[in-house]
Amino acid sequence: MKARVMIVAVSCLVVSAATSQAQVVVRGTESSDQSTSSSRVDIITPDREIVPLIKETRKTQENETTQRNETITRVRLNGGGYFDWQRSTTVKKEVAPGVTDVSSDVVQMDRQGGERTTERSTETVVQTDNGEKSQTKVYTPNSTGRLVLDHVVTATTVTEPGGREKTTRVEQVADVNGNLVVQNQIEGTTTEQGPNETATTAETRSVNHLTGQLGVTGESTTSTRTDGATKQVETVVRRPGRTGWEVTGSTTTTETTAPDGSVTRETIESGRSLYSTYTGNQLLEPLVPQRKTIEHETRQPDGTVVVQRDVFRRDVNGDWTPETFSTNQPTTGLGSRPAPSVSPPPQPPPESSEPLPNGAQ
Image (cartoon, rainbow, N blue to C red):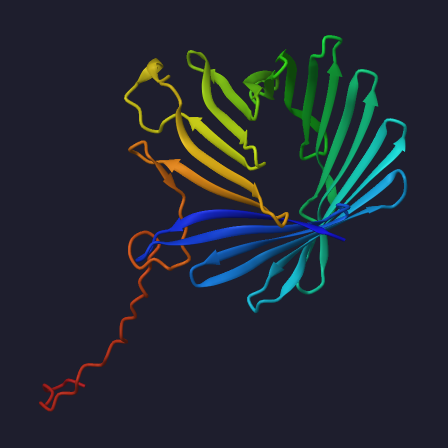
């Protein structure tokens, strides 16, 4: 069975007495039939290499209508060994034509062999003539450890004759008495703007805790454009402000595929600046880029896929600076802590050879 290997390398500069290179590498393998896969996280520094996390997944087709996925996550101990920390099991079953049930359990284990279920979810998806309906219920443990209903998500997607899709998503949470109350309601519409462009608008309604009624708290617009080997996705988020709707953030992702199959992906996240010369109702200056992520994905001749990710942030001067990390204990500045000083115990006064005054003891 031939395995396909994927390596994700996240490179960061380490700032210390001598500038050096460090990497966080995620290595993964997958069988040719995609029935088994494994991944591991490698933290590589100039003086050591540590694998703190290993994850293995196995997919089993039990019969024509049932599929089981099991994932085991192992974490590293101080002595270098590993123990099974978390087990996730998902069972997908077609119970009727067009009806699918999905159940998932997340079990956390301790080093003494104990187990406890931290989350359980059930999902039912029903295919209709013009779309689909789904309902997801999530259970979490309460203070006694018993699983109770935490929240329910219901979604309905309808495809209109012109190709436009409308999706309604309702999120309900359980109160202290176990009764479900609506928390959020999202209305989304996806339309085709042309042969290579789609647009999705979404409106979010949340509960006003003072009135108990749903009110519009945000809206977003996502446009996807494809031009040859370049694909661009832009999302703009707006929220109600003092002067009406205000743009609070945006994300732009540009993905380019080269003739050799390598992919370059750049994501820029923009938001309001923390420093502004505007006051009052004039506090509506344009968004400024704040975070940038660049990914390079290349396929090696041996079939290995290598992805290198670099993350940058804007400094106060507007320049992009790479995010850094270091495993060295700081000796000065923030994070340095000198050893606590211990005062010597008090000593009794030295005895005097002079005679005491009359009457003194």
